[in-house]
Each structure stands twice: as structure tokens, then as C-alpha cells.
Image (tube, rainbow, N blue to C red; front, side, top):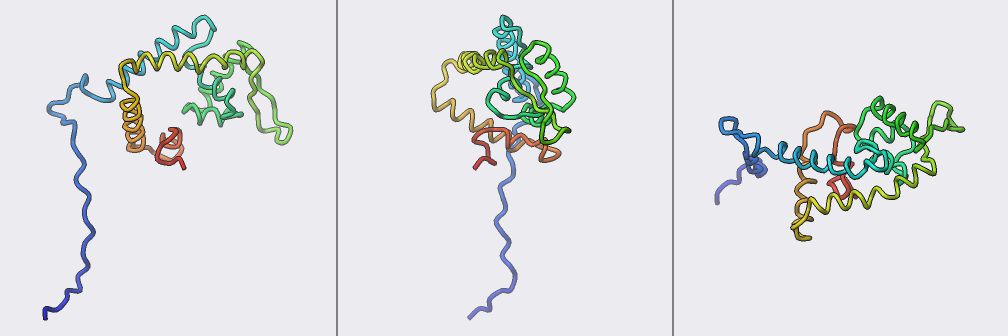
Length: 183
């Protein structure tokens, strides 16, 4: 009878990652980053064009909508939710406040905290944003089947999960509904 080996069995190795790009034949027009930039630029331009009558900009709709949906009530929370630094968010809120769409209110419980509230005008402006965004994005997805749409979202979520990040604060995954960190 052969003697059993005491050597541990190594765990199976993961297959090597696929290499889709090679420096020697790299073409920007075939880059997913370049293609996504074109899509985002087109979306931003059309959103800006459709927001023009409301005196809002493409940069202003997200914090306005997040406030309306209850997803952030302080500068820091909004900055995290919109993926901006606090200084940029402060400047953005300055412009929204100057337009009469929001106001800063010091917390009664902690005077160091400044809460951001929508005004009646801000709530009225925020109500129409989802319909505008839905229309612009649906136009961009013209010709996609429901299955293709779900597949595309799945691929993008996977890319977000794979994207390198320096710290948990800059990680994209928690910001993506249905992403790998969502329960």
C-alpha cells in the first residue's frame, strides 16, 4: 500500500485575467473609457440643454434631487453622495441658494452642523428632474431590449466593482444600487 504524502494540496489558482488592451496596438477610439466619456458628454449636453429653461445646470440637478429624495442633509453628506469634495459642494450650494432653491440652517442639536433644506421653489424644481433624466437616458438607450439594458447595467456595475480605488471613501461600489455591496 502506497504511503500518503504529507504535502498540502495547493488551492486551485484563478485563471489569469483577460488582457483586452495592449500598448503596442492601443487606439483611443476603441477604449471603453473614451467611449464612456463620449456617452457621458452627450448625456450631460442634452441634460444641460433641457434644464436651460429652469435655470438649472447639469451640475446642479444631482444635489437638488438628492436633497429632495432625503439622501443627504449636510454639505458633507451631499458631497459624498455626489462624489464631490466639500469645497466644490459648498460652491454648488452657494449657487443653488442664490437661486432660492435651498437654504442652510444651523442644527439646533449641534451648532457645528449646518443642514441643507430645499425651499418650496427647490422642491418644485426637483419634482421634474426624474422625468427629464428618464427621457434623456431612454433616448440614449433607443433600440436596446430590456434584457440588453439589464446586461449593460450588470456590466457597468462589475466595472465599478473592479475599478481601483485609493480608499473606501472613494470607492464607487456603495454608490451603485444593486452593486456588490448592496444587501
